[in-house]
Length: 381
Ligand SMILES: Cc1ncc(COP(=O)(O)O)c(C=O)c1O
Figure 1 (cartoon, rainbow, N blue to C red):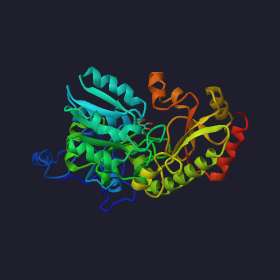
Figure 2: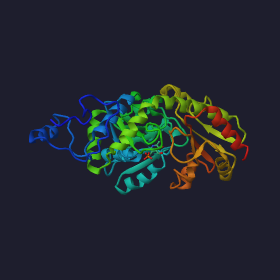
Figure 3: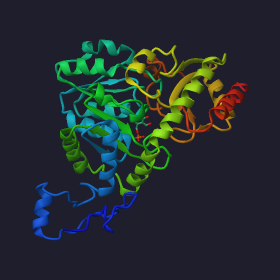
Figure 4: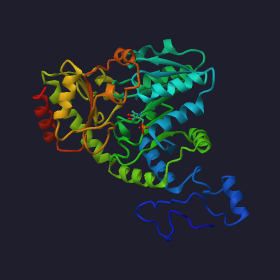
């Protein structure tokens, strides 16, 4: 037997070793057969599997309460792997308008491949049964959603989906498993941009999908075929991020609530959206399915015009003007100039994203420093 790459010294190191090998020596043809037949956990080629990646998959599965988890290169790679694994020409997929902007681009590819995409507003999730067609195979949603933090009732959606033999996929990036575990409410798969909260330090890109062992095997086939396996170094960074996730998620959520409460009282701000606010339309459902906080992201409109929002962001001194979210630093952006730039304007506006809508991802800084920063920047608008 080759030495176990995770215990190369006979006793386990505290940190999973970064195994950079592309390929692994077969110590005998018998070992090759045992690996191929799945009798032993062995490794052959990085596109198939990697021990550093496998270690992190097991940790995320534990956090999401799933049988298994598969990790890949980015959050969008994870979403695309799901579409490629479970959809064929002639199928229909229902995707909520309120999902990360790149889904719009992926939908153009899916439509070119003969897959019909139905877009639904998250506010209309109670009528999901009206959108399910005989060829619908999948419903894809985010809750809370990007960027408007809309909340959908996962259990109610899962019930409708399963009545029609449809899979429900929930993107749990905004909540992280610390605040929400969609599988426990009936979702079939949970997907993450692990680039965000799970990694948490703006230094890696990764995606993760948690679900049953059967789904792991099906998704593994796709990952192995198309080559979206994560590199071992990023997997190691992701492992380090996961170690502090609980602490970071707690601070990000309490900061987000404090910032949302502050902003809700400001005259130059309107439409503050954060599921933790009692006034938020998603609050009632959020308290049913979220725990220990409501995620670290909020959205709001600044002034009346985009220039007002730009002036405000330019005046910030602590909160950083950048895309992405879920990191230790607080980050802010105008979605229609960044993550939703590619989307036709009429689509964005129909579901509530305006020219002056701002998305703010709370970091782990002291809340009073962030509030002071918002206060002084608003005074410049
Ligand atoms: C909710 C959500 N899902 C998926 C993605 C895509 O993730 P990635 O950038 O890792 O491909 C993002 C990116 O911002 C996101 O916010």
